[in-house]
Length: 133
Image (cartoon, rainbow, N blue to C red; front, side, top):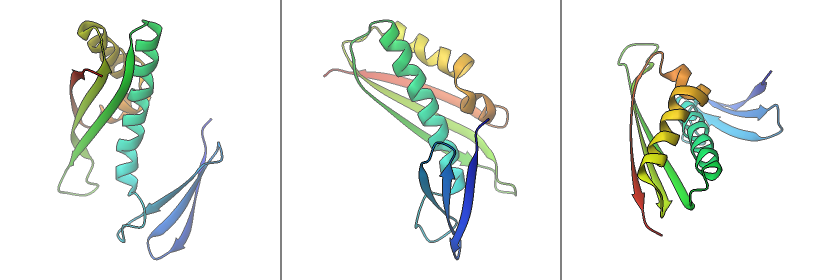
């Protein structure tokens, strides 16, 4: 089971302590840290990035870098859930495009729990490009 403890610091700023011992600053308005909704996108980006790197490494693809950019659009009415999420993968190296596409599909459709959960409420679109070293 995963665990997180959030403690109020002041105004709308909090520290989050993960079960694995990491601390994150959260903020609800003063820009002192990431907002909780930004952290949902961070979780999704990190989850799929880990999957894609792992899959491409197992396929012995010469991956030298990966950047995942995620943008989310939210509903206007409360609870202002994400309604559309755009994911852009930028992979670097002399890579087989079909293998990159397949790694992304496997992450999004099978392995990434964060994508699966957010996909229940939001339409997720993804694209990728490969850049040479």
